[in-house]
Image (cartoon, rainbow, N blue to C red; front, side, top):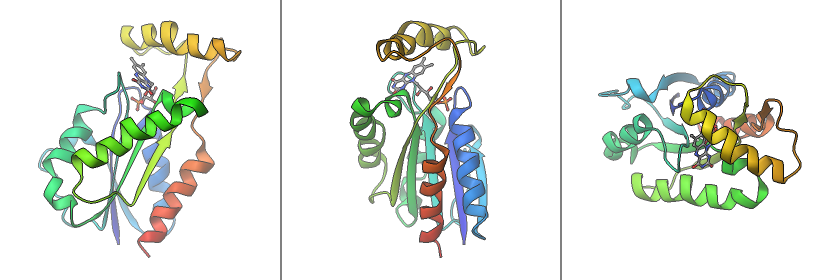
Length: 180
Ligand SMILES: Cc1cc2nc3c(=O)[nH]c(=O)nc-3n(C[C@H](O)[C@H](O)[C@H](O)COP(=O)(O)O)c2cc1C
């Protein structure tokens, strides 16, 4: 059995999640290839039993690379087990989770997949007020994300990692079990 993980990332968060998913599946004796979606033009997905596609979200959007991958492989993906995951700010708070699930996963599955995905994963993000990730990141962190956290009385002076690694590992293990 062979699984392909394709991730799109702007700030590294989805890459970290994809790596962890890969480790869990590999530990179950399944061969895994992990690929940045930017390098997947003409990628041959035929040999894989399962394809896991993920992305970070920026202003409501998946990365171009992951979108292109889904578009380019639509017909081949219809014969495979496909799982989708995202990492986004909406996953960090109970009250925005349902919206994140709908907009970034369910609507994407309807638009890009012929069949229902075998699983979808909505995973938290990282808040880092001191990260050197460019102007857009700085502005979004300072004026949008920080404000939301401040409202909840959360200390925003240091880095916060909302990725629930146990949840991510359990999600990956469930996928591995589907390949046994
Ligand atoms: C400029 C910017 C825009 C963002 N827009 C959204 C958004 O529209 N919805 C959301 O839920 N999270 C949003 N986020 C949070 C990111 O989705 C989150 O940080 C994610 O983990 C990034 O993944 P990546 O590091 O793999 O690119 C935004 C973050 C930044 C810096």
